[in-house]
Length: 220
Image (tube, rainbow, N blue to C red; front, side, top):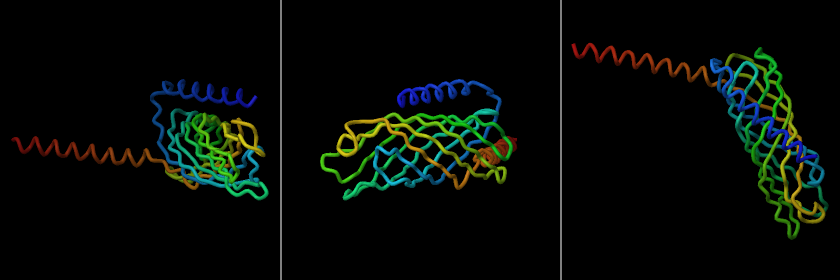
């Protein structure tokens, strides 16, 4: 069942990105940066505390009236909850998300699906446990953006992430297993970059025109 969910998420996000890469080519959407913090609730098979924390950084692009794409990575870690065992569960993510935006007003709810890679490190002090594994990652979720100004806003989302971890040691498990994790991501800033780049491009264009005019007059 977990593998089927991962497969559906992978197929869905690839289809959405491929379709919207060519759709509405005239749409001039903004680029934006999304740094923030996250709260993670790992699967019970990992024998961790209920929650851990981390951070992330994403770069987004408005593709059309209803679609955004975000590329980035994040890192979380959680203490283990085993008696007499030290160490933490650490997860590093890198991926791309397709966001379906229900609105382009100040309040912008969305659904998301994404794929990428996950580096799971079950770094517990258990003899014989390697605990490190890199695998495909898939995630689905929902959230919203809220624009405070034309160039600054907030983003929050909650997502379920599936990847594979190495649990090949008692009392954790007997091999590599697909594990879900729930992540609440809170962005401290959603900074639109396109307007700044457009201003720089406009200034450069004007400078080029002035240099061209000066060059023509020097030849006379």
